[in-house]
Image (spheres, rainbow, N blue to C red):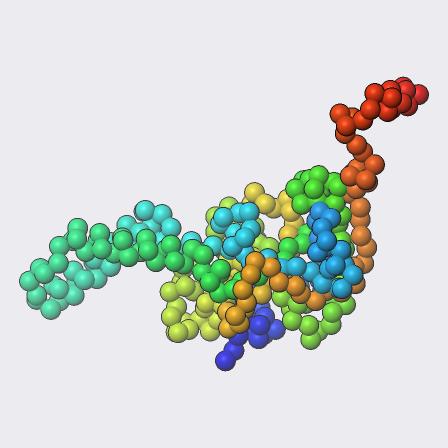
Length: 287
């Protein structure tokens, strides 16, 4: 059985998926490069972060745990109008078949359309978080190390660190290296409907696998400031439980300390100091 981990090394699959994102977002400069740029991981200081640095590891997160509800979501028949339009098309097919077969009207239009709308709503709900069901894990990086917003949001208001990695050091045979892709930003989600409807790969060779990868890499333009790249691993055949998993990583190229990195170690709360200590600090500040 060919799995997602096999396909991410397949040149044709990579070209098909990158082209789909390029056309879907209107960014015709978008592609999956062979040589990766330096990538940066903003993070607060936690025990697992130190362990990862020491053990040459990084932590990937199940995509359903991300702060953006629509991150990695399939938007299939998402709106009332989309469901209504599709239901009307299905009714037209039934009506045409009844007329062609010279059958009496056994189904009423309103009843048939309503049934289809309910079905599509349930189908949309199930498809929306399908990447979760497929055991999709993601690890996020940026191509920049000096983003004020990133330092604030992901590195505990500049008290954390930013770790630089050169994933080219992992070599051509590394699954992790082949799993790293740039995020494709767009105002609207890339339309993957034809891939999702292509059961048993009747039209496209890589239908569902490509749809999963495109959904994991497509984000709203509101996040474009992050200049994000992602490791994307779909572990559907494996029984991978939990919210996080550890992955192999190269030695960090550098570790950048936040502007307020030393704050937790040297700053203290004035309210907890004695009167003499407060007076000493006050005199020091006036010097």
